Length: 248
Image (cartoon, rainbow, N blue to C red; front, side):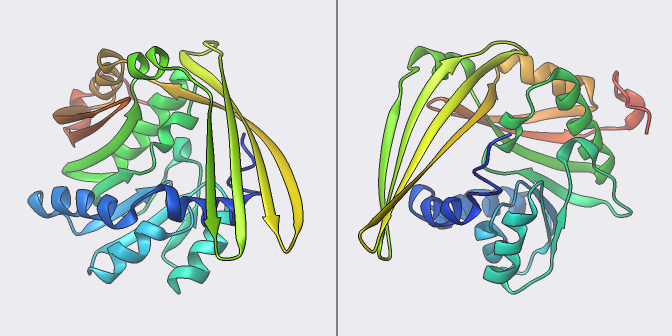
């Protein structure tokens, strides 16, 4: 698993404030949640809390979940709230149910085994109220592999200069997966440090992710397509209609 969210959590927090437009991302989710009248929400992959702050400021009954305590420590400090919990998305278990579950930042890309996808979606199904809403984005396999290029990013944050050099390599061991090799170079106070990181990510074809949803008791309501990604809105249907059911 990548170090980006553990040993390099502070670097992530500094970089992604400039990579993501969190106001725009919040507005996207907020419009969906308002239309569906969802107020009690779970965000999976909440990271350092940049969306959490916006959800809480706008009156949502919010809980954020992340795999990495390092990210959650930053989130608690930034948001001044303890509405966060550490958990693996593949092993969800709550004594409450939510109006909506969001998997943000396309975090499901880190679940590369079919069983892990099924377990994740089944746990979400059980965490939602009847007709509850699941919203999540995925990398689209055709778009990723049609333009499978290395890339570099340069970011200035306060007195730091951050550079990420990314190289991609096909993997395909467990699906439409690829390896992401990244070098982070940080320059501050005339000193330079660097870190190497590697992780495996998964992308999906549309038919593939729709089948996963069907097997785990969801009805797809809408698909919002963008270049290299798409976002799915799915509704929880009765457990009795689910073809796949994980014994818990």
